[in-house]
Image (cartoon, rainbow, N blue to C red):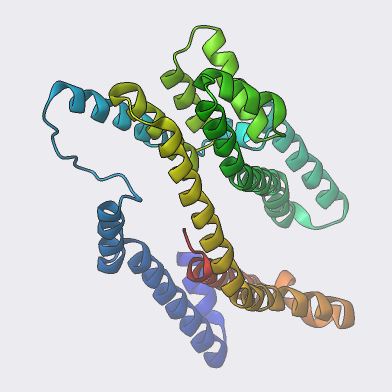
Length: 333
């Protein structure tokens, strides 16, 4: 920080004023992000989500009667899986992406890729500083981004197939089949990822796990609202009984309505997403064009202290702007 202020003091007055304006703008954007996530409106939205039932409350009402207490314990166990394990830790994210590898395999591959990028950058003459930054971005951030995209894609495929799987369970129960056999049919007949997840549930019950424990593990592998709803319905049905086929049929209708609403929101937000992509990529495109047309003009940013400072500020403001636009166009349905 002290070095930064020394560099700013050595700049011309106009450039120093521009740098200070950019720093103030960055601070304002950071404060806006904090207010957006932790401000009064965010707290109000979280309270509304608790009331609507889309988010587990921090305090639960005490239910009377031993049977209701048992049901509440089951529900807390199912909903607490995500809070206890995080749901998106590296091991669970590898399982969500359908990758059969250990965590240390992934970490070793990322470290090897980072080392390779660093060696190539040194051979290309970028220097240790820029080579190390590029190695961190491509070697560590690249695999994590690819893993997140693969996990998100597989979760989306699971969501699109899950309502059909519930219909299979409903028809099987109405025809007289037990629940375990219906789950086994889904594992045999439906494609992955739904078929694979239900096969793991069946295999878990065969090696001695209860259905409740197998469903808890399924929720860990697929931390989605749809899977938690299914696990909660089964937990309630095991404790209180009732018409499971009718309950699952209504759940299937709700999941299809959620999918239609999600698709409609994504269609409405497509224009905003395209605008955000264009705005976010424009500085990089301009920098690349300048590097091709006038490399000596853009090279000042990489060869001088003032240029490095301005480049750092530009990268930070670009990152904050992308995060702000991402929060503005992301909708949780």
